[in-house]
Image (cartoon, helix red, strand yellow):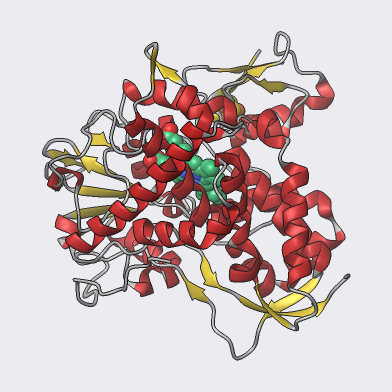
Length: 413
Length: 64
Ligand code: HEM
Ligand code: SF4
């Protein structure tokens, strides 16, 4: 695995309001407290880090920016020391390096339409038996251990295996993919040169896989993209590679985090765990509530031109974080926003984003999350955080437990 | 009572289809539409209201 070593170029955070750093390890650990404090004082925090970054924390503001493609571009969606405007050979808006997530209108919709059918609910439902089998295999591999790591031995492997199968990539490269995902999403505060190196390694891995699919065509998403057309022309190899990178990166840490956070909740809330075991009919509302309360994904936008956003003087090329997870905890939008209610029936959450970039993989992510929770609970109806061990949370825009040691108190195996 | 989906707002979150498959279906692009002419039988009225209340894009409305 070619994982970058972590050395932030920034020092410790002095104020969450004026000097925040979402890649400081204490941010994700204390995210809910930080958002609620900011919501009460200033709804838009700012930092000079990463060349200038804004953080709006209310549902209204997040919603407004997600819909406003006129002032905010998706050209960069991961805040990092390197900005799209720093890269002379970056693919400009409205296409961007990884369509459709980096694309703006009008191109965005055309690139998105290519992928939508492959991720529609009816196509995705066909994967359920395979995902269930995968979960059962992972559980069987954990055997009879008293303490298992629900993040590294279970949650992590589910999205990696599924997307490798969909793209037709070697499943044994799972660790390689996770290394790339780490480099793109977590190693964001490094020297710009190091980050560029990591991206080159990713590009050359993808180029190799794409070449293999050109030489040996098969029935998978990679060949589907190679055969797809836009404006009556085949997609450029750059577009194909960018979309593949997107699918690889977008689905792994995100889903792993959603599964991990849900299991963390069940490990720390025995009443909810028992209710779900006794009454599986609660599963649909429970899954939506886990997605709301522990939404794993914060996206970003780039300010197109200097813009005064509700009194905040945003400068061209500033970053703006879009914390859908903070929107989901806004008491103006949700009753008892800070309580996790697994039977919450009215739950208009934004875990999968809002507006034109709605998560293309949301049907797949929901399926993986539900099946993973069902199978884990079926095998281990009673578990709790392992005493004397620590839960380790991710850093950066995707929030979830990276290490989740749990002690199994009852098993059905 | 009738439900309708505003196609210009629907982004395919599929919450409506999950909550009330009796009332909503999705096309190949994952966008939702009301089944038939959108008429809601009385026993499905509560589900219709829940679909409205859970659509993240405020795309569903109840008419009449
Ligand atoms: C629980 C797991 C997941 C969450 C919470 C999540 C969340 C999100 C969010 C919030 C966006 C919006 C991006 C924006 O506004 O800029 C997004 C976009 C996207 N997601 Fe996911 N995602 C998850 C899993 C997946 C999976 C499994 C896949 C596919 C394998 C995927 C593929 C995508 C793609 C392709 C986009 C870009 C859509 C566009 O720009 O039109 N995601 N995701
Ligand atoms: S819940 Fe709303 S956005 Fe989602 S498919 Fe239904 S109508 Fe469309």
